[in-house]
Length: 113
Image (cartoon, rainbow, N blue to C red; front, side):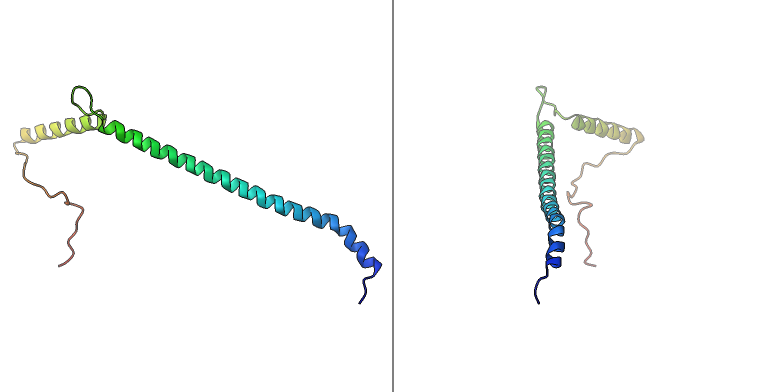
């Protein structure tokens, strides 16, 4: 079966449209890849900032002031609450227990029975 001139005429008329479609598809793939790379870079930057912030917070929490107290305000607040709870327990008439406590209390559940 031979190619007729009418077939070539139709094919030549559509070649521009086909070429544009292929170009748009290739550019779209490159654009999507670029956006994905930017998103990955942004996630890496955010993760690095979070790690640095956590390291900075940890360094502040473990530092000690010149007067011997901890630098973190949370430690001082915790000590005040502990003192006030001990004072309130003594004022009620109960003696706070100073016995040995298991550090695994509340973390280990024995289900062997």
